[in-house]
Length: 268
Ligand SMILES: NC(=O)c1ccc[n+]([C@@H]2O[C@H](COP(=O)([O-])OP(=O)(O)OC[C@H]3O[C@@H](n4cnc5c(N)ncnc54)[C@H](OP(=O)(O)O)[C@@H]3O)[C@@H](O)[C@H]2O)c1
Image 1 (cartoon, rainbow, N blue to C red):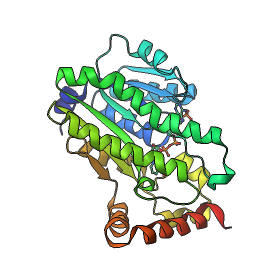
Image 2 (image 1 turned 90 degrees about the vertical axis):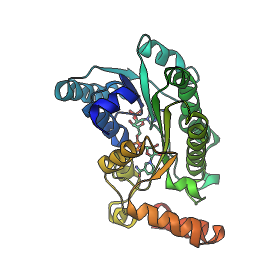
Image 3 (image 1 turned 180 degrees about the vertical axis):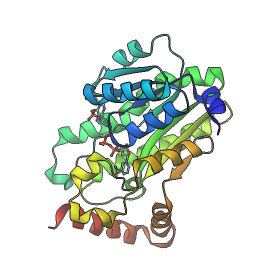
Image 4 (image 1 turned 120 degrees about the horizontal axis):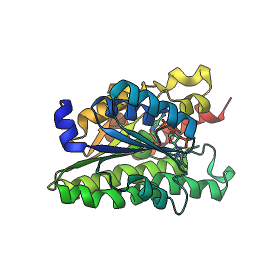
């Protein structure tokens, strides 16, 4: 899609929730390159501010930053204040909390935070922003999801379940909004070389996960946004998802992923 069409469909402002690093930072760069103004949200303000400066200088767009914990019960109040008077035509919900570990070893509070950031957050922001998009007859919503959400797997139980939620939510919204001109995409990434992937994955085991680069995931998402409802990033992830979803039994797929995750995060 050329920049003019992209701006007409999804501009003039985009909101990226979880923009300070990794895939969200890359979404912000590529959206700014299309000429949209941005509202960048994450907890760490320093990362947001340096990204904002880079995008203003490089792309000549307006950028607002908001330091906010998206898991906060009252998170919509500061968002409303930040977007007051702005026409937000594109929402990217990218933020996530991914507690790693066996289910019984993790505390309930961490699991609730995972639900708040990964599920409650997108529900609130879609509810806030989508009505105006539908009324205008154009707009876009990207919910970042994960191949972890296609089946269960040890060490990531709650996170995987929240990602299934996002994939299915995006599909439902796509179906509900598709005649209104609002595009919805559940973007399903596999392993991606972000700072949190590097922090969570021992260096010698990273290659086993066949990680993609954030820029490639984001480019595929933006290219596919007007098609929806779901896109699996990259060839390797598509092949794995096909094998596990269509060829293996559910039981075999869960055991297969479980053994991979145990090797990555559990057994030394
Ligand atoms: N990386 C992978 O291998 C991979 C694989 C499959 C799917 N994904 C999906 O892709 C998305 C991005 O992944 P990533 O690896 O780039 O994630 P990440 O590095 O963990 O960071 C995500 C962004 O969200 C922000 N964030 C996290 N918790 C927040 C909170 N409570 N409030 C506000 N902002 C918050 C972080 O900034 P602050 O810390 O400054 O708040 C950061 O900017 C996620 O939805 C994830 O499920 C990633």
